[in-house]
Length: 394
Image (tube, rainbow, N blue to C red; front, top):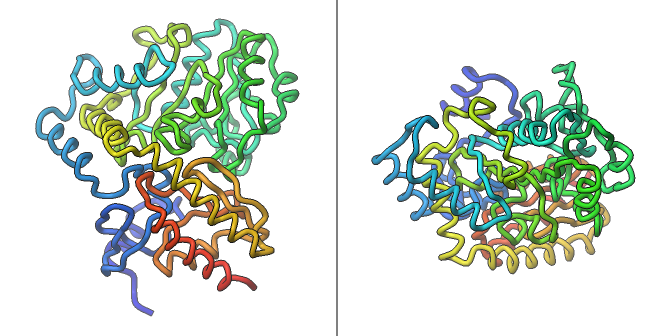
């Protein structure tokens, strides 16, 4: 067996051990393909955990980043700059939001949303979320996350967070009281296994929060920026939140997060209440603007709808032919295939054959390809997946 490459060896020797990395080092990418240090090509059906929405090496995105980096890279939020102003206006024009707060990641966006909600509803502090949810790794976002195994060893968690069963509106109603500031929910649960809410669930949440005077937060860190076929998933469900968090694909590969909010929900964010050193970084904002430009110029959302339907149909065909596939679920290009057995061996076999997939929630193979992927590339990936399933049967 060959020894570790210098890239892998240096990473393992010098960085913390909290990632269960696959033994592959990528050096470049183009479109839906990644190349490792040995020149092997991989079809990417994961897009860096739903980040590389335009694929790899997108020329318009790369040019926008390079131009902004050579013009103005950082100013701090004590001053104004054009990319931040343009991006905020673009997001306000495209969504329900009146105000935008910029940060650097989904976790930071959710932390900010929690603080914003508590400021918006004076004298209330409780946050209701659902079991199986994922909202981030910092302590506040982790406390909102409905996965106790991720909290193990980091307790005690910050107080004021309540978790109830996903899809059970009665449980939400029972959990809300006079101290509840907000309900936070992913329109489609991502890390928890691509779980789609029952019909009417999100609209019932909207009504329940209105009746209780609580804020409704949609965590669209994974579902946002076209992943489900609309710019944000709330549009497809026909339910509008008070606060929405966005990150991952927003920068097409550069770190950026955002909190979108109504005027009323954002009113408590006055000077001194919250901040972010790198939030609204000019280069990251320029990248996000380039992503939105590409969506318009390249009909990306239309592609998500069409190719997403093709992917779901191909997965349904595969499920119909096998006893070890429980269900295919999701929307657009955010799909999960639940197995009767662990998913990681299947993902490992596909990776060895040159296709990048993801295992989540133990038994779910997750599909988050670039939003620019073609039907022919989907067919290629399904062929490798079918063989990986067969090769890993015990």
